[in-house]
Image (tube, rainbow, N blue to C red; front, side):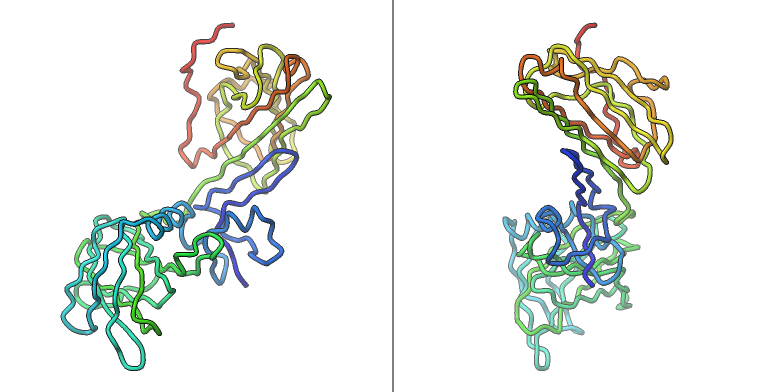
Length: 324
């Protein structure tokens, strides 16, 4: 069974619920997956544990495609190893020496920071790590990279570094004499991550049409009540946008936003339960709708992102100067 670490998208109306790759780790990657699921799939693995945060996969893929590149020979292991691949954010094209009926080679690596590091390879050869004393460092987790995400990389191995001493990577045995290797730091938290809700609402008077943004999560997230909701299509000078949310099937909170031409957004007027801009709220169900008067001068669309506070996202700064 293939399990994907991905941005998980669920569409309801024009709403998209995005699970940032740092946390989304258990979606079936069958051929029946939607184009959205296939396009955002990051990393597969046997089991239901996230391997690498998606943004790190994307970052490594950029290096695999565009460099910077460096070519170097790997050395037999055990033996005198001198090729150093410590400089970060580099795609190393390594030549492996012959070892028995295949190829195997070693290089040096000294981490700049402690914590988890992902070693991306293409092709997906086996990787071993030894500390400065020659003691094997166990692999924390590993998985294949979906070719629809990054055709230049095949597999990732994650190792935990407890010291900044020089270590040794051993690639192989492999059937080919070359391998591309990219090492990226993940930090202490690894795949721990956060969640984000995207809502997109639309209203047209002529012709009459509307779509409400809706999102439903399987658990509640904590977020800040936004001060305003940006308009992404048309110009709004009146009318309302209403953000509704609830948790656990309980009563809904309704926050009313009035349309303003400057800065072409809906600005918070108030909420039914006393929430104010920037105050903390918790919900698992969300709805965003635009009233008809807001589209009196033409179709209007608005988008809103509500970020799980575990992400550290706080976007309630009052940096515009519109007036009541």
